[in-house]
Length: 355
Image 1 (cartoon, helix red, strand yellow):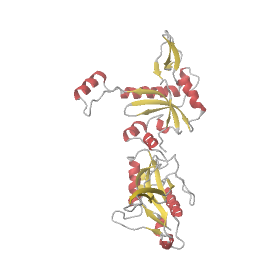
Image 2 (tube, rainbow, N blue to C red):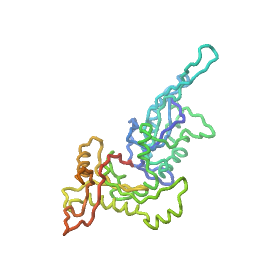
Image 3 (cartoon, rainbow, N blue to C red):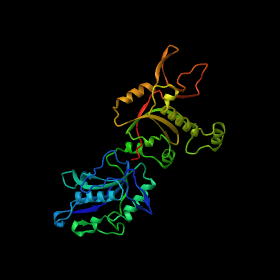
Image 4 (tube, rainbow, N blue to C red):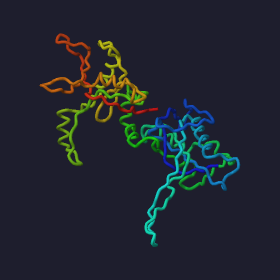
């Protein structure tokens, strides 16, 4: 026997089609009786559907479901709707309060339960709390989704209707995957503009199926420094007149390098490279490879190949960036048609995931 309560958790990037705000069945595995545990690969943003916990023995109904059984059934029914859902055990947390009593004992520490143990059900996988699909799914879960097992009183679900909570799932809300760190969530959160710039692009980094990739080249736009909290309109006009905005040019350079790396053998190189491109508001960059582990030996190989090399300059060893030219072999008689410069120090980064 179980009860519902409010809690804090949420969803993964959904592979789901929506029509009239009713989810259509997508290719999401749904096996009755199978447990789908939350992992660090899910999220970073999710929908917290419900948190369930067992009730005291004196309130139980014979034959009623336990919290785990109810959670598994809820996950199963969500998956039947094409919504990937998972379970997560929220352990009990105990806190302490200072107690200043009037007797001679002085200050004491009193323990209290800050959170009860509960089984949380999370759904979906999103890279942003503002994801349009997430909002539609959340509205559906809160207002329209009616799990069939909750309709049977013999299952033992206890739920108290209140003005702010008319249904068992009406308090569903967006949250982050509790298994992932704040810095990881921030790194993997994609704002709407960035998503728009990258989602439908050929060789987009968002389509990289690995967990890691090696960043090898960066292209940045021009910048203007703002003094205080108020930008100077005159300075902006002069800057734009002199330089314009070269973010588009930077994005084009990054995309062209990605294309050149993927077809490098046509220009005389010994192999083609698995290259990806990514754009944000301030820069565009190119990455190489798709890795499941930061210890993949190919990372060091690529780092050595594309990273800067120390060369002597005016009696000193200077770290010099490597170049990529089209064609590979150039000469005074045959200058490069295209030329790009790699970052002197390639950097391993996590791939923003759209699962």
